[in-house]
Image (cartoon, rainbow, N blue to C red):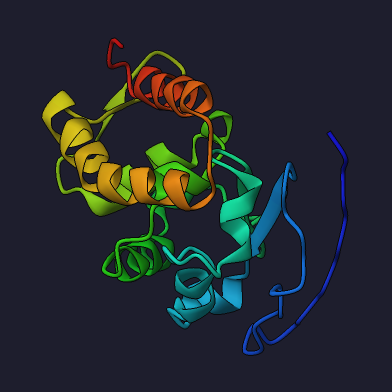
Length: 180
């Protein structure tokens, strides 16, 4: 796999980067969301970049090829889903139904973070020396079911081979402790 690094830093978070000419085929995309965007609930860039559209260059990276990063909360001891502004940002973005399952790298646990932020059934359970996270199976299934139509459409638009689709879906389900 060829690694391409293209960095565009925009301090204010107000100016979207023009990614339309970037070839993302077989690329791993590092996608940064700024504290400025989160605190001001500016979801437009994220929503645009995760849209279901043949002209969206991100779809050509393939399923599970985007690693989401949040900047500006490094000194905050809370987990992202515990930060009210972050949860509100994700809920606002989720209203447009971005296909998190297509884009997010499963290993990053981003799908679980989004699920925790978008469901009222999420629970943090105390454990010995750590906290266990719990999302009821019904809620996990509901979240994943809401993603499948767009996931299939994006795979079709990007001409993802069936074998790769099956492997990606299996990995997603297993990450939610759902047997394949």
